[in-house]
Image (spheres, one colour):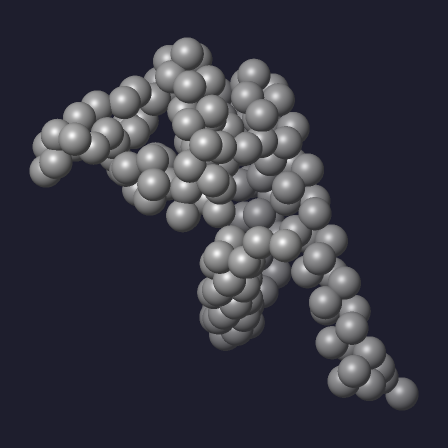
Length: 157
């Protein structure tokens, strides 16, 4: 007899937690390889996807204090990865913009290349219908985690 639904859900929960942990550890390894902390690396990723963004908005997006963002920006500015510029809509405000570092981007892409290749091999064994189900699950789980993360960043112990 197969596993019960509760056993399957319990195993799935543990598998998703493990996948999350492994992703964080892999991110740490990539970040260290290029001379950044994981926080700096993830901050740069958020900034790349958002484009020039105010420090306050970045604090909200990353779940950090404005002081924490200031420290990150100071370090990343010193490393030549970001710069502070006057907000064109409100010159009293400063926005943080990513700097083009194609050398670093190429290194990161090269480090992630084996992951992309392994992923292509992994998904090759699934039908289109199965991939659609997996994609739906991952998107729903990501929205759930983002909602929960947003809730945590508004509450302090």
